[in-house]
Length: 560
View 1 (cartoon, one colour):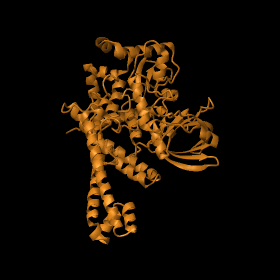
View 2: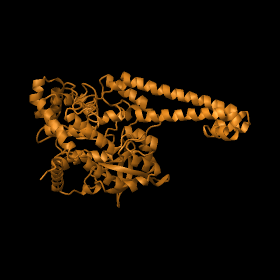
View 3: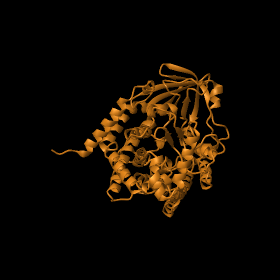
View 4: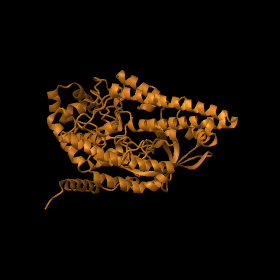
């Protein structure tokens, strides 16, 4: 009798995960989460409190300018934190500093009064400005220290404006949990907004509910919140700043109050990562870092090609000094551009082919990954873990079924946001990429599995990414070529438009005006139907020029 080892492995892993989940006591907060759980959330503000959460009038919405500020700080060895804002991240470089306003929040049939609500996010905040759909953080005890809701003090409502599938973040958190990595729970919410006297129960859309990583999370997962929780936002993973704790506060953003011993433990860990010799690092790292959890955390990030994360070395993860073992564990955060969707690095194809042995962005910005994977025993354990997870929780049939089930549930909810949202949703799920949706989920799963398994078998090395590679000669030449093609097609269309205008005026002012404002339709009708004697040549050039422009646009969309 033949045995499908991959199927057995998947079954064992899923049974173990289910046993772990069912072994935990049910909590009141469980009712807020689940892939088939939809809350109805109503945010009600006074006009004054609504105004309090709005960004200031002098915010610079030019993303390029914000990115320039980030680059300057990175090159200067600073932190990912603008002086313009009290919060880290790229939005702060535009002058955004999210502030709380007081609101009454109704979840289901329960109303919680005088709750703190603010906008949240960085890249998604820019997306919210364009779409009008912002993410929110709800802090139940912002104005009342003892206030909570079903055992929680905070929850997040993520807008998913960067992810038309609405699924990348929910699926990714689930995969981390299946791999044994502590990660936030998720659910769904229809969100409504009332501003007294201005807006009455306006539907904002479908949101992802994400559990906050805080003391309540730590108590649920670890049974204790006595450890040190930090959320680094600096250019480099576990940077060493000497013995000055204030510098660590500015870079690591502690979320719990550290004891003197915990402060020193973090400093000593950073010192080990950045300065220890190879022999000392290999002998000592296991005393500071939970190696099994770290390798699982790394493996899932790599399988998901989740580059805007710990792999980038600057943000979107937590580190927790677990008090019993006195070792650090890493926790995921902000996963909406996982599944190879971080457009600021590489191309869709290169991200699907991300190197498993050099997954960190650039050289030197993530010494922890580089040094751990340079140790043969840990590299082999990591490879074994990547292979196990690829053939179990990231099995193609299992992922397709999971995507289809989630999509079936979400489809009518997405439809409530309009036909465009539905079209983008279906394209983002697909088996093949489209110009409007280059990160199709099922296609990513298939191609990413092929790449990972080829690399494990030694048939490929995958592709390494760095910020410098964005300006490689090949990419520069490609950009220049596309720009030249677009300008040439534009010049031809300008010439055709002028010819059609003159040809129309030779008949009448009316046809001259129509050819001018209804290009390319009117010149085609005029030249091939109305006045072949005067407009045929212009019409032929219009058809050829406009067709070339379409071809160039499609080529840029598909190949860039």
